[in-house]
Image (cartoon, rainbow over all chains, first blue to last red; front, side):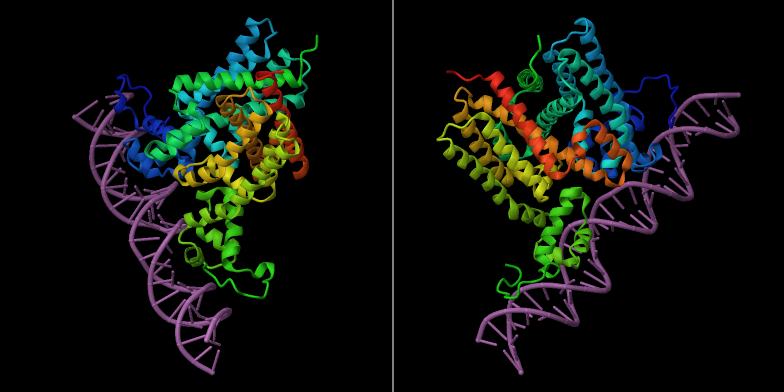
Length: 236
Length: 236
DNA sequence: AACAATATTAAACAGCTGTTTGAGTTCTGT
DNA sequence: ACAGAACTCAAACAGCTGTTTAATATTGTT
């Protein structure tokens, strides 16, 4: 819808349709600066597109934002759900707590560091404009939350639903924090003093992308597993 | 500075000087909606003040924001530092890990739920406008971080500085998450469906202010203490 | 080649943004 | 009581916001 879908020639990267270029530019800019801090003209310039294109292809700036979400979030959600599913199959429905947590943390961190989508979500979930995200919550957050609950319950049957609420919140809180730290640090590219201070307070920020993901995933997983083992020990 | 400080009559609550009323209104609105989503006219209306007052008493909207921070952050920081200091004295420099964490978590959560200042900071630290907060980081975050490091080191000497970086980040990440959750939920006052869903996913959000603080403080403290005990056991 | 659908464009829209102005009012110290 | 500082106010400022318009160009289908 919007532009002809039946074109046979594969367009060169810089020559794709305006709609796609806008989606990519929006994802990146929204992630980098937040919805409110990006103007339509800024989006148009980045996508090498006329200002009117935003309102032509999408009805509004807000709707463009929603489309950016829609394009990615099912993929990300399904990767996490599949990861948990696979784990359950490979372990005959008896996974270890550590494995369950690692799936969630890794998929989230990896996704957040690969494309700008999860970065955008993480930032936007913490900003204003609450009402906007109800659909996102129902379709993205809720299913993952539920799958996580089930997997953790399989791993440690003594966990009640209320325990799970608290535990999962603690894990997600850590994930968000480590992602946002990285964003904040990257934001300081042009401010050497700020960058230096952040590196001093948290040296891991100086690591490369993959190494940061690896170490952070490892820390959150080990930290949270130890917490669960301590608070809700295995009954045997 | 700005308005006469020598007035002898104590002004009635609704009759205070414009500067103070602006600071209060700003703190509340910035916390509720974020810096970018609050207009100067909105601030002026809330403070029952002329639009020009913002630029007369403070040079700019940005500067008003900074003043809001300056007014509170030393108090909050010192409360936390004092709390840690007192703990160290009462335990003859040998506190338990659980006690150290509880001080940080409680002071932060209590402060965030009492006045809007920490809510504002928490929200703004996660938004755009990175450069703004360098001073805040140096004067507020760094000292508390350092004091926390020392106290935790006293409680568990086997912890290295690198361990502490990760551990404290995990604790702070949880604190932020539980504060922001509460904010998000409060934002949904006028959206019953959103509110209902949030309560369903996390029943604790339905609790009253004090009970939420109590249970959340308790959870984060126990979770993090268990994690540290598991990962870095006491050498004896 | 001609038609209609689709896409792009520059220009303008009304409305809001933070800030400034200059004249008016209120307060303070003497 | 008076001079001068401190403050308030309505009005206007230039600049940006998201969005719309109407003319033009490009496209796919016949």
